[in-house]
Length: 185
Length: 222
Image 1 (cartoon, each protein chain N blue to C red):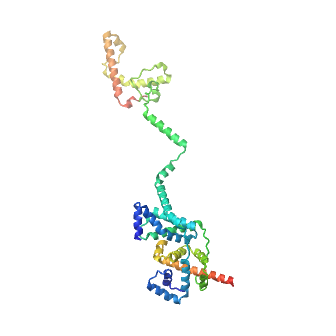
Image 2: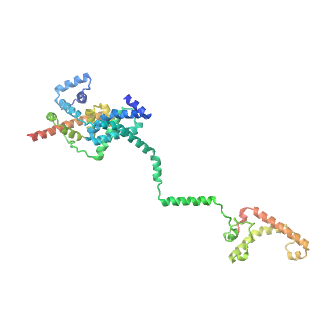
Image 3: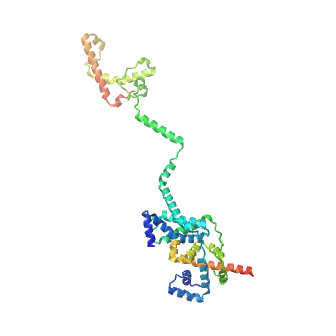
């Protein structure tokens, strides 16, 4: 991350190449995160550009207590959250009322069917903080400490959001599997 | 349902094979006996493998330029914000600008153009009751042009204005001036009369000078 700080210093001194290097370095990971959140290229590309613009125009607010990448993730997630709220365009499968104690043993069958679409829908149906925490942990491979910084919460809260999110996904997938099995029979 | 949250928190890293050796052995030992965590691992792998389509090299190559231009634009907008804010709020209708311009011209003209001397002769000092514009050097006016009211006011003013002169003359006069002056004057020779005339003229002039130098309140008429 020291390399990022060095590039930031060079950019602040007027080095355009340092600017390009920072964007090129982080754009793919950020795009993947955003795409998984919004599920379409146009919105992901728009949010990616907005994330970088917000980061570079507000660079004086970057206090370097976390890594530049974590800071970018923080901005990207906030922008994505705003987009969710503003547009409310994403069809969500409501699973908030799923009872966590239900038996998820039927999950294996569905996983073997590679039902990615169902999983995507189940993920989209999670409450915002749980969905983003699961994405950051599972898809981005971020540590809970980093997730806590990005989501601006405690490590304990990040862990709780993760566990609740994963449990709901498992139950949701198991529930769908049950319905499909009934249909097939 | 498994409640070993420590293992569950390690599963994503195990799935990505980024755990150290000790944690890897620990997780594998748990997985061997926990069906719930095996299911969760399978779910996490499926999530992690969620494909993100690649927008293509052109998209990646163009992104730094797009971002840079937008950053520059936002900065220039920020810089001009202060001036733009002021100008936006100074937008007034044309008539207001015209009125303001005319007002300024009138005021400046009044200040820089010399004003013509006030024609005191045409100024009704008597009615105004002020002698601030009174000028002893002015041309005598024709009293026949005055109305009865103006004449009365002028008379009143003259009595007040010349009272000090009369007092001055009275103080300087020898004793016995209460008697009929015409009687005394008739006894004087022409040379003496000329001398008295010169003396009176001088006294009058002194009195006028004194009046001119006296405080303004003394000049107030009426």
